[in-house]
Amino acid sequence: MTTNDHFSPRVALVTGSGSGIGAAVARRLARPGTSLLLHARSNRAGCEATAEAVCSAGAQAEIVLGDLSDPETAGVLVTRSIGAFGSLDVLVANAGFPILKGFGEVTAEDMDYAYRVISAGFCQMATAAMPHLEKSNHGRVVAVSSLNVHTFRNDFPVFPASAAAKAGLEALARSLAVQLSPTGTTVNVVAPGMINANPEHLGELFEPQELERISGLIPLGRLGRAEEVAAMIDFLVSEDASYITGQVIHVNGGII
Image (cartoon, rainbow, N blue to C red; front, side, top):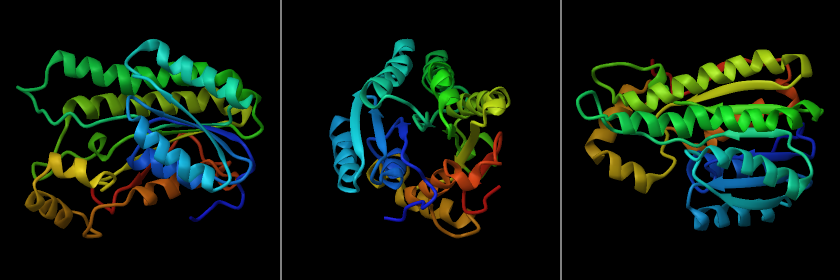
């Protein structure tokens, strides 16, 4: 595992860390002296596997399950972080999901659920975390968005409900960056492209020939890896990224 040598001991909360990008982020951040609160909606087995990897790297880990569509869950996550580890320095808001429905299929319920989990969930969690981030000597927030906020082509999948919620997430993160800037806390967004984070799940969403076609549209000619997204997030929470805030950074193989 590659580690960031400029990462001082701290406490990080990573949502959606039972699999995929969130699990890769937790593993990447794990090192002696670091404590991580791992979250998933219901994937305890995945979080336990992530926790095992995190602890093997010398870090501490706690697990909290909860649906971020419930307004109380965000506050619970922050409270549990403080209760378990005494502080909170890093927030990685990774929870999200694709709703593979276009206009004519997507429902008001789809739109509402995506908003509550992705946009409102981030707002509630960031609000609860703010007092603790402001006290930190090294406050960092990274929100994980998606290329679907930025890529609209007739030869590429579009997910209106998920994209709208992620667009809201980006606006909230950039607003938070301005508000927290006097404290030195940085807030950035990472927008992954087509990432093969969960091969089994991706295979349920797309047929093999469709994935091959999509890969051919990406300038680098392949799907991304969760570890590549995690590496960018690891950099953004490091001391080396202390002058980067309010940015949306794409990890997408060059597709536009």
